[in-house]
Image 1: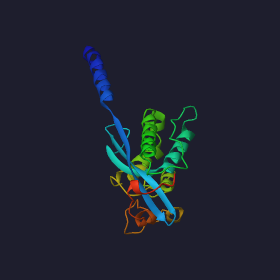
Image 2: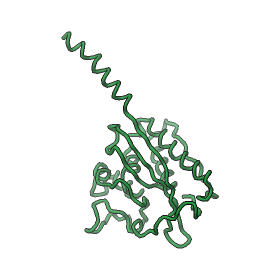
Image 3: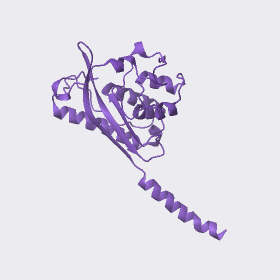
Image 4: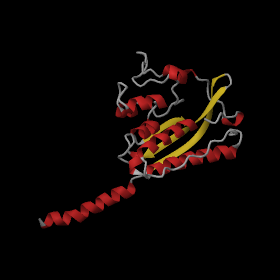
Length: 210
């Protein structure tokens, strides 16, 4: 019994040290303009996540998301955190331009600070949609379907089978039936995502703020 009592503070010390060394590092970077169709463009950003936290299934991940995806995520988190004051996103700007380096820098900094604040709250960190948003290739509509159990893959499978990075995050309604061809992976990128033009260097074009 005495030996067990002596082990308790030792184990507490080990657990305390492990909690102190746990980290979650996120970076929002590399804005890219995508031409979806004549007169219709959007910008997305790369989210680089590195962590040793057991809360995440992958220690390193790279995904691309657009501003409207972040708005969707915040609305989802709001529904699960009625008594919590959620961090704010950088404001929508109808005159946002990728030619304006100051605007671009503020936008990316604001998105990164939003995610960093979310990571500080265990309740928000437990939301499956957040993990799919950060560590899977699924577009927003498919994330919703996956969380509801309406896809043939689970949340864990969607994260584990995703590649480290990809070129687009938005599934269009016409490609969102969860019917992938036999030539694609179980997760599948939308047809629209694969057919998009190559990203335009961000210093050459304007963004539709979405």
